[in-house]
Length: 182
Image 1 (cartoon, helix red, strand yellow):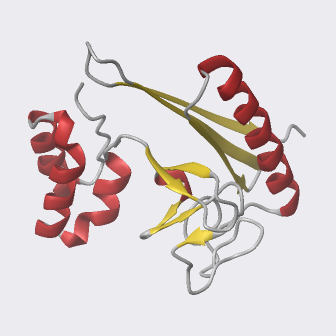
Image 2 (cartoon, one colour; image 1 turned 45 degrees about the vertical axis):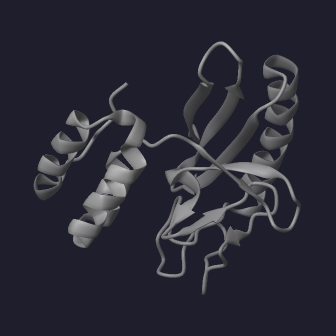
């Protein structure tokens, strides 16, 4: 499976083409190598290349969560269980607005109180769904504020091992956007 690439920045495009031709089992290593060669394209490359979901453990709650571009700010990731970034950010925004005034996901943004309550409910619901349907694995739901509503993503990961077959990983990704009707 070739990594999904959506690089719109012209200087980023040759690097995306190179990643498409390399072994997809080593996408993370290849991506890190490209970032070392062209650090000015870090954000473009990280947002343009889909990588396998990785699992982290929340230091406050001890629960596992999935890390991806939707809960990332630089090298920090926000836990859906504690709403805290790991490693901690210097400053972050409240209500989906980052310290620099940026809205939406990223830039230290956390969802507003109402959206955060919906995010917590969705995480609890999908945690039960994941356990009943997949009998294990990890799920994470992330919501963020938009000017006209909110958006979110639901992530599921399950790994199955067997003596006779190589490990099988299931990744599921759903993106949603809700807009207020006027």
